[in-house]
Image 1 (cartoon, helix red, strand yellow):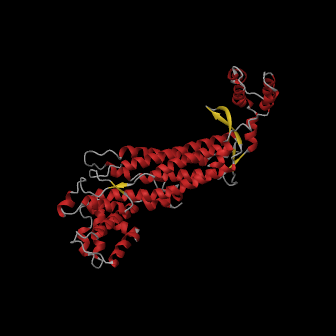
Image 2: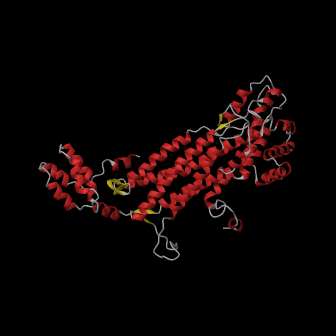
Image 3: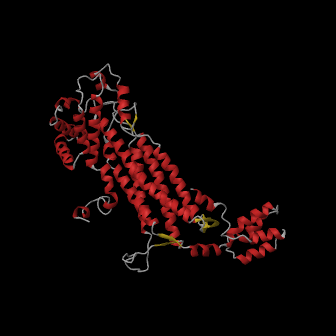
Length: 454
């Protein structure tokens, strides 16, 4: 860890830099500048290709290539140049415009394009598109992490499909399940919410200062700006939002952030369950000889990866929840409070990434302890009460539930006690044998099938 990392205020860029550095490509100040440069240039090129805008010169293939290189070769020096301009303008988007004017002035034929950089745009035309593309790109990275987590859980659900364990409802011993089936539940939940996340539309607008195409219409009244701006937005892989104020209202962001919160809550639920299974001894963790679990208790092997995931998921959700509530509210046609809030989107993604990586790391370190699972089952024979009373119902035995309730409620039973009870029943020998063949290990319904089916 270098000196700069040791002095950062946020652990995102300090302690956890190795887990979050890939997000700088999307959410750093330099990245935001690059997305703004991309939007400005794409708008310029788009306008130049419209036949009715005759004042905008037609771009040669070479000039288009050079413009594209401004985007693809955007460097930290370019970012510094924009920041230097911003010190004078005190306006970040205008600084990008001036930066591009300077770039164009050095290109053959570029000077004629300078008046049409940022043509008819308000800053939010550039910003809302930039953020939409940024978040869309970042979500692709997020999908990779989520799919890796999903596949890890799916592999375990198959591997442990037949490893029977005691369920606990309300914290009390309950009908058996398998470890594989319990993990399959999380796979299914993630699948459902990832599908929702993937279906969210990234909306944007290019309609001027208050959303009415005022400047567009006054300059070129004959052009259908509604269709033209929609075509531009769609060319960027986004969905056009025609009805806005100065800002795109960010409702789609709220949808996306709430979807991420639900995914994070699933991961949080998983983290706590695995932590609990470790505390019961159902899982053992891989031991690394050089590591220390406690500064005073040498025996400790703590479930730190799951605790790390839990803490960072909570931080991510706190930010996402605030953004989802804050961004959709703007005074009248615009206030600036959304701008500073949006700069923290990357922090939410960073905390999610830290959590997901910790969760995957933790899952790769656990080994199931079948002996502990079996021992727990053997000690809780009373969980067969459901099975026995259900078979007795089938045999039309009156008050079957009440008989089992009297025998088992609040008690821990052994196998011999159950057998004695079964022998006292007024049922056929075949039914008695059926009941005696029951065990916690074979009373799992279709849990194994469900685990393997996911």
